[in-house]
Length: 214
Image (cartoon, rainbow, N blue to C red; front, top):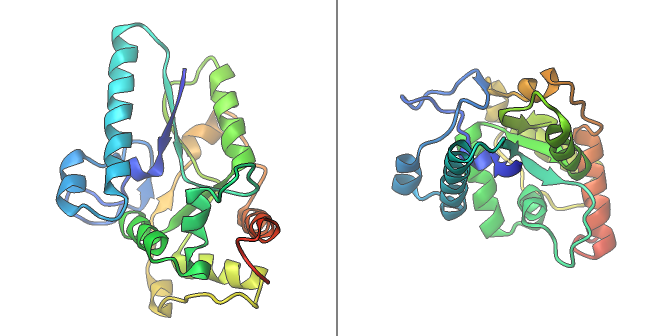
């Protein structure tokens, strides 16, 4: 059984509030900080934490092989009739939507950078782990992670005519945590799409949908 978790259950901060150099599957956030901070999107974070905990408890009690896929921000083409919320978060520097900008800022504050994965790769990872007989525990699915200024630069390069809210350049001097997908890759999984491809296909899909105008 494959459970779909979220990067919202992971934090780059240690117990003292300092940034880790590498963020892996062991870096799970705890419930108390989520309840105390109530950062944007905190109810979603809490639901993912409690659901994953209950799923593993049930699996252990009933001898079920359970694997959890920790998805990062999923982007790329979509088939839904509305814009997926993950794409609205990713593109909030373009749209200026305060709700999604606040979620993006909360992710940056917790993780130090924005981790991305293409929709095709996240679907492939679910199938890969379902079929792999050595898969166990949790797996971060992250094709790439970028500091906010770099993400915004990629958005700007994809279409210079878009109105993009830029951040202070001072972020460039900060050493950011590595959001590691090593456990998944060590099992043999490979990613097809990098950040340029993800951004390009996401913006193209949103222009075709009419969500973005160029």
